Image (cartoon, rainbow, N blue to C red):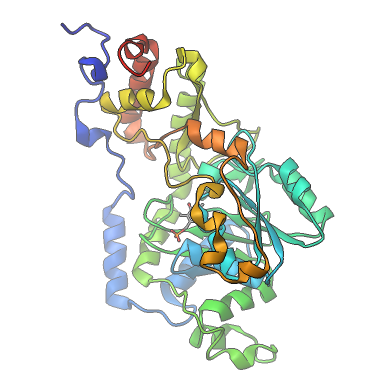
Amino acid sequence: MKTRNQLALCGGDKTISNGKEARFVWPPLTKKIERSVLRQLKTTISIYDRSGIFEEFENAFGSYHNRKRALVCSSGTLAIHSMFVAADFKEGDEVICPAYTFFATVTPLLQTGAIPVLCDSDENGNIDPKEIEKSITPKTKGVVVTHMWGIPCQMDEITALCKKHKLILLEDCSHAHGTKYKGKLVGTFGAMAAWSLQGAKTVTGGEGGVFATDDDELYYRALLLGHYNKRCRQELPKDHPFHKFAVTGMGLKYRAHPLAIAIAKELFDDLEEMLAARNNFARVFCANQTIQKVLRPPAIEAGSRPSWYALVFQYQKEALENLDIEKFTKALQAEGLVEVDRPASTSPLNLLPLFETPQELFPVYLRHPFSYKKGDFPKAETFYQNAIKIPIWSHPKDKKVMGLYEKGLVKVIKNYRELLTGSGN
Ligand SMILES: *Cc1c(COP(=O)(O)O)cnc(C)c1O
């Protein structure tokens, strides 16, 4: 027989019975976006230079970040590759990278022959400045950071280190559109920054990316890499030594799709409003005493504002008599909290075959060998194993569903003992 608080996994009623209501649908497809896509469709679906919706988006995105140059690309991965090529990373150079990130922060580096020197995480899963310092050698050329899940890295410490050791700092802001560190937007700390506009990202066009810098020379190199012909001819000064390469550039094409940028522009226009709603929701979750006892929220410094790309908690199994994380997650999902998830593909890079035996795909690493293995980054690996992710909705009207997620979490935590009986525990 059912009792009032019985967990759904044990036969009780679900907290959220309406499956549709519990789904996190992204992006919100408004009439405004539909109109904008149709307008763009009737204008042009290929833009060869810096004009039209590209120019509009780049102007808006650049001035929001107070960056002189912004460049739309076909993906975040390629915006990141553009940073590495613009930085002139070469075979045998060492570049310090987070061990815990989505792999595309680092994989484009393998195209340059430079060596990724991975660093362990801090308590938020971000690259730890103390580990960066330990990894610096005479071969180190730069540092790339990812503001994981929209929580800013420790930028005071990281910028100071880069300055002291004359290292170029690059930021992957793909989780962190609009994130602020102590009042300052991320993407404004490094010499260059990159954002993804892929379908799951806060500002999205389905696929796409943005590269930004204040430095003209870095910008010209990024243009030459992936924006050949008209755009290079338009923007490279006639007297620049590379102007002669304008027609071909370096021969690759990283140009964005105008329909994607039209969508991204609409979402970008709403970014501040979305982040205000998310921060209100996230604050409630992080302050809930019952949840806090079991799920440790990220530590946020005063004046910082996460983008809450997702709210990623650290599960503390001791608080629930060592209840297995898998069972805890299953119990939440059974309550109808269908979006509760353990991030799988965003794993520490040392667990991926490409970082174990890179030379099998990239022969340059026969000359400059590197290899990582399980156990190399205990903090990153622990963070990954204990991570439980919930989406944060982006509109004040989503208060109800956020309230139900909170209720479901509290229910499972208060009644966890029902999960201890039976096999496995
Ligand atoms: C999504 C993402 C990327 C890759 O961006 P794409 O637009 O999918 O190529 C890179 N880094 C991080 C941290 C990401 O989340």
